[in-house]
Length: 440
Image 1 (spheres, rainbow, N blue to C red):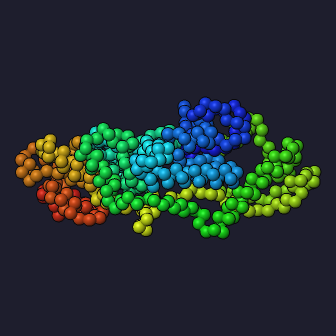
Image 2 (cartoon, one colour):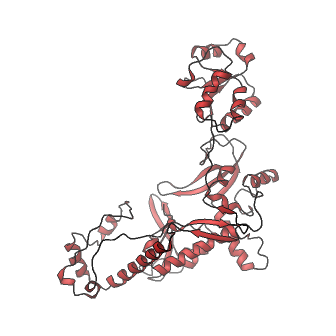
Image 3 (cartoon, one colour):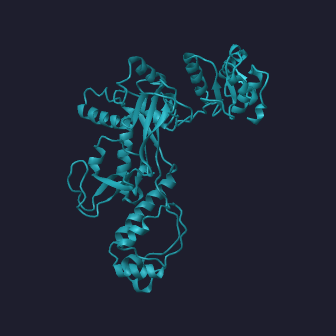
């Protein structure tokens, strides 16, 4: 989903959001798109001002109308984005002692990248990790990532620190965390724990990320040459068509059963959200009245497929030939008790809190009352032997009863599935009753 937009100024009326000067007509401008009161509103910048701002610059696929720019402008933008990405993850901004300007620019962008993240201590059990889908435990370190959605605007997604380090964002934490929001509010112990969980001290030599390699979807040289040829051809046709009169365009549209957009119609037609790179096409028919115009004189209509430059996939390479990718292969997270419900019976506050953390860490849920959807009640044999109304209710509903040995068995097993975890209930139950676990 594009969060930035590019284009050429249609007039000299737009004002730069950084320097407050007018943007000259036909010059390249870049906008940050934000949804205000349900309307997607652009805030325009000069090209230089945009890259000198203290906010995170997106990747190529996040720039709307990027493929409509001139070929030379596309190349320049792509190179600038590549350079900014390299500076954010390849050079420690605190080590450029002799290059004050370069150090300040590098640190500014490094700070802008980290500004989209936040670290804090989880205050409750309500947050869910966006990567592994498990609950973030109360009192644990938690990372938050600012994302933008066209429908709801800006919002934060939550992550376990370890889970975030395994995603595409992990490469941004190769150096100092002083600019990470919330980092300076942590205690020294938690700061050290954060560095450890982000693997900052593990396999991170000083030579890391000294070279940046960009692999594009257009990998082979032949296809890349074809893409560049299409871009040059597109620019050529736009320049030549700019000299065609309105009357000629109307004749051309009428001959091909199309309609020339004008006035309010343009805004109405532009509301269509359908996007495709391979639309159905047919040969264009050129009316005899305009065949003598220079742009159509040597033009031969044909059906082709236009190639586009897609999102670059960035890869950081160490000097020792070990590769550290931003596109990290995601490891499968084992949650053997995912969404399985338990009820804790007759535990004091400290024991109940510790047991609740164990269950949530395994992906399970803890209910506040007896319900029909419980997989088991967790208690001790001594508590179960004491007669009570609650024990009679558990027996009447035929709910299994287990003790803490059940969770110890699951924790000692690797890559256990939910079905296997439920099957263990029969082995570790401490009550003579209980329904068939296969029906849970």
